Image 1 (tube, rainbow over the protein chains, first blue to last red):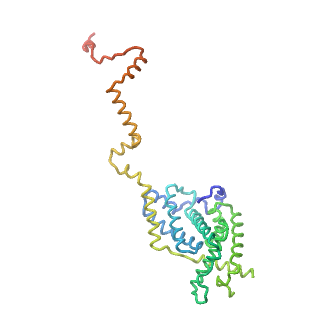
Image 2: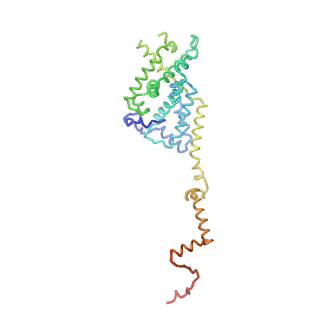
Image 3: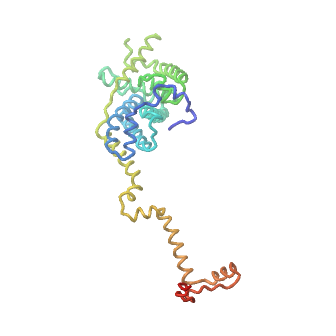
Length: 206
Length: 117
């Protein structure tokens, strides 16, 4: 899932990617690679909720988010023996792989047709707030699916994960300026897609 | 209008950020099962050597089973040459020394004579 062609030396300038003096998760990963089963349990307890959260926010689909979480963790188990402490942080790697797997899934959803999937399940006034919330989240996710992959990733990392531009630059292996451009364009496109859906989003009364 | 549209988008974003899904036991179990399977697969070729008896380590020193194959082949060939003494071999010896060479394994010299003088 990595894109070597996009790799840029800018990573070293971002605090997010700078070699942490002590990356506890990297150390646990190496312990797991050396046969420590308890390390795998600790990593799962601390990382799986994070990955599931990111995938849920992007996909707004519990089953899909769980599948992505399992796949991301499986890839983590596989890279464990080759993990180089100090070169990258586990958190950065997780954001990147999760982001890529989610846009893979969003791309497939795009093929179904935005109008077919963006409808709220039950738009009657009797729906509960929770259902309205789910419908809003699904509409946001489907609007993300309508964006080009890199724009969707940048917007999601910026606005759904609340990360800084240098952090996103490290995750996406691009420069900070490229991140700014992607998020700006992505956000505009997102607003355009969601325009006219204010009723569905539950913000029509404003 | 543009202002409220931007607010709506920000509201959506903050609503998404507030999501904190907790993985269920089933998902955790699936992930840990993967971790175990990957670790077991990785350890499989190493385990017999580290846990096996001494002759396995000896085998490993030789280079494992592929090396043993070559060893067996050359041993069998050596045995065959020794037993059968193929004609081609004495021809080679003759061409190397230029004549028939005989090696007398008997002792002609009186060993005691070496002690004399």
